[in-house]
Image (tube, rainbow, N blue to C red; front, side):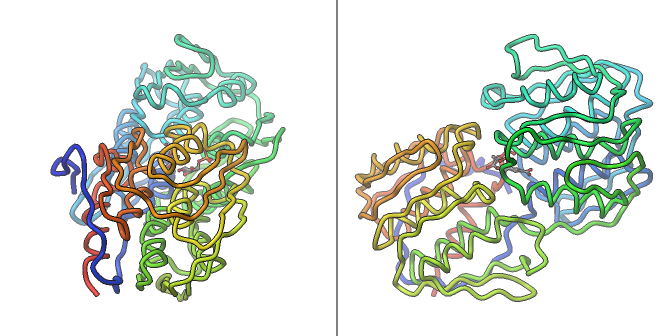
Amino acid sequence: MSTASLPPVLALSPVEQPPDATLRPPGSKSITNRALLCAALAEGTSTLTGVLFADDTRAMLGAITALGAEVEVDEAATTVKVRGTDPRTASGPVTLYANQSGTTARFLLPTLALRPARGVLDGDAQLRARPFGPLVEALRALGAQVEEPAEAGRLPLAVTGPVHRGRVPLPGHLSSQFLSGLLMAAPLMPQGLAVELTSALVSVPYVTMTAAVMSAFGVDADGLGAAPGRYRAAEYAIEPDASAASYFLAAAAITGGRITVAGLGAASLQGDVRFADVLERMGARVSRDADGITVTGTGTLRGVDVDMADISDTAQTLAAVAVHADGPTRVRGIGFIRHKETDRLAAVVTELRRAGIDAQEHDDGFTINPGAPAPTRFATYGDHRMAMSLSLLGLRSAGIEIDDPRCVAKTYPGFFADLSRATARA
Ligand SMILES: O=C(O)C1=C[C@@H](OP(=O)(O)O)[C@@H](O)[C@H](O)C1
Ligand SMILES: C=C(OP(=O)(O)O)C(=O)O
């Protein structure tokens, strides 16, 4: 699936009747990038199934190949075989390119610090604007050399390992990805690693996910460290992406239809499945079973006051739902999403106001008042989640257009095709 056939501006039409559909979104970006890295660091050949193919995971595939893993891709079968490598035996320099992908970049920097050679990590302009300072400080504290040829705490960065210490302080309030990246490299550090958090951790479920994927590849991690050891090759099945699922569950709530997202059962590793709980609090009917989550819109949506620090990738989805509620929605706990693909608090409030919706930005979140969106061409800020969330406003309102819809290539190239399939028929 590619975004090449999408126009530069996508015009959306409201649904003719409430949808009644089942779909299985592509594999989880977060799990794919963890499984690819753990497999690349493992002894033996792993087989990953349900792999996401999108810009962010292609960045990780390219990087582990550059690091010396052997990768065999069968995209049609969503399968990747990875023969692992040991970065501690590397000799030459390497350059890795993370494109726009925060996970790829933050997961790989600590792995570069395992190599007794110089490794350069870079990304596109958007990723170069995102913070890396806590990881730079942590790797230096562990004994690696880090050069910051551009700006302090920003890509590009050059890292020369190996590390030789095993304890490190780390702030948690900006991003959990720094901790996840350190944890995945931890078993290959000479003393393992113990991290001491110096500020409250955001996006906590992603660290639990990191420990779960590490454990599937034979390493025990407790969320703050791991003992020295080796990953073992595994056969690993990746779940559908729960953040991607949020758009479809929201679509059912907004339209009064019924949509089932298959493949996200009660044992899901992804915190974002809890977005369905927020829809339930708002008045949608939610059922969960071993195979998936179904949301049925009831025609009533109440405004909510909700902390989304654990599930912040779904905050923009909720903003689109909140427009259709019967009272204000206040989202808290997500000041850190100003450092994602764009300043997501400013972006979502600016775009909703452009459509005539009464929305306010706060230090830690936003308030959205319900309203009828005026015909609007929405800017998307190179942020896939702006494009996917704002497209939900086109389900009930006429004249909604999405600028640069191709930005969904970051995590979900087939999003607009899947949205029109899921919402086209009763
Ligand atoms: O570890 C991960 O896979 C992710 C962690 C989250 O980032 P932060 O920890 O920066 O909030 C999330 O927003 C991102 O899409 C994926
Ligand atoms: C924040 C995101 O991605 P990343 O940090 O991995 O670039 C996202 O997918 O919403």
